[in-house]
Image (cartoon, rainbow, N blue to C red):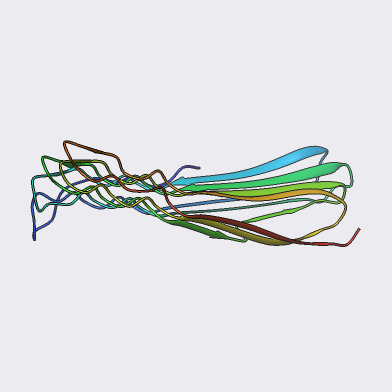
Amino acid sequence: GDAGVGAGAGNAANPGDGGAGGDATALAMGSNDGNGTSFATAVATGGAGGRATGIGSVGGYGGSADARASMAAMSSSGGSSAHAVATGGAGGDGLAGAYGGDGGVVNLANAVAAQSPPFARATQEAFGGRGGSSAGGVAGVAGDARSALTTTLTGFDEVASNATGGQGGSATDGGEARDGGYADGSLHVAGTG
């Protein structure tokens, strides 16, 4: 399921600042002893940071996200599929000279597991959050994304580990835009059959 919602209520130190986005966590687990393919999908999206207004103010940072999924099929005629997707929240935009907030960072490590006698599929995807835009100030830093998966293949299996860095914050009114985020996707596989 989806998780994570952010809001921008400001803070006591500077009422013009945007509030931070909420962090998100999603977990999906299952098992099946029947025929056909069973699926477990977890999707988490960090909350967006709140907007900021005025010089000296900063948009809220996007929330982080974590998703984990596992599925086991016990039947020799069934398959299993586990899919986890985590997306960092967007940084809050900066208005009237305020800086944009930073996008949420995502770091997935061995977030999926699928077991089945005939066939199993395991996929995890990490997406960094977008940096907040700025009108007349400095835009927010894009969120980095990392996805690392280490697993063992036992036959007709499919595995994937993907990462996509967030979009850098844009700028208008003479402001300074930012570059896109860093992405690192790694997959280590050992085969047994």
